[in-house]
Image (tube, rainbow, N blue to C red; front, side):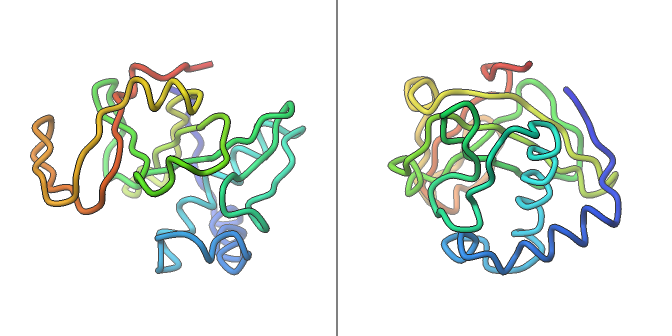
Length: 159
């Protein structure tokens, strides 16, 4: 997995992105959680310089890249990811106008962002398992706090 050390200039820029219109549709209500997602978007935009950022105006997707709508997803963790860990998408977002997902993980102890991989929306829906709020995830004992779909990291395309 590709990793980036997150510096203060990226953190400062991420906090400035919290006020963008597209962020107002996020379930993330505190600035810290929004900033984590913004950090991933900043790294995505620096990695794919031809990507057009639309997350400041569009609640469905974050970028357009090669004519495809990309939603950048990021989870905050206190560890580096392992292949058997999972990525998640809230069930309420499954109908959003998105073609591909790009998944990242932010290690808050090390201030490091990891790129986990890509997957098309269709493939994600086909391969993911649905979890219902209140149920206990049998893979890790997590009590699900919102209906979502989960997929193991090792099922993503990692380029």
